[in-house]
Length: 310
Image (tube, rainbow, N blue to C red):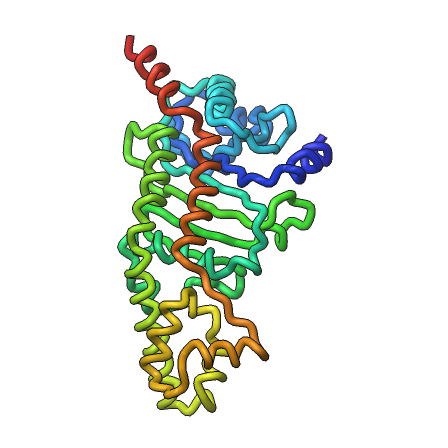
């Protein structure tokens, strides 16, 4: 069944969003051993005290294609309710939700775009110091990552980890401390708002990288690390995210040759490409469409919520 699913999904070109896992606090009269024995791998107990359990949920194991992700939030929530009923949950509180978006775009070919997306969200999370002091790319995990106590964003090469997986790149947005009485839809809407607001920081991110690169050039000059600017660009090309960043740094270095001419000559022997606000906006629309497809029409949810209050 799983291989058939993979064949079907591999033909889809659109990005795919779903909830990967959740952390929930539940109250149930069941004993620990009974929960572990009968949960079909959907629930892992992290900690417990008397009838209060902190558990990790993998709802997808309840799917008819076992382990395959639900493509609609309504179906996901129905399966989640089934799990809660199965373990006789009296009440529960959402503590963490991991939303993931899988993409066909190849990780290695769009690393700068990933860097920009994560960097912009870093500014939105007030994590500017992370951008100023370190590269957002983690060489060990081959991923771009930024995080704080409340939220974490990671973009990585999913294909490299799971060769048969139908998508190439994964974006994970992890809400790690969900306020009380905030439901899954509200968490997803908050993530959408963060993504939308992050676009306003594009020029600020460029300015941060201009300063970051110029500081590295000054340090390299003191240490006699590179023979010339060409060598510096060769080893630090991933930091030149946009053309404006390159132009400003080139001006700072003070080379007399025309910037575009220097770049033309450099590209004859080496590769140096840039992303733009246009390419970023285009990718953001693709991500947003995937999330909207998963969560469904908000008008439908309004009707459901009104019916609940009657």
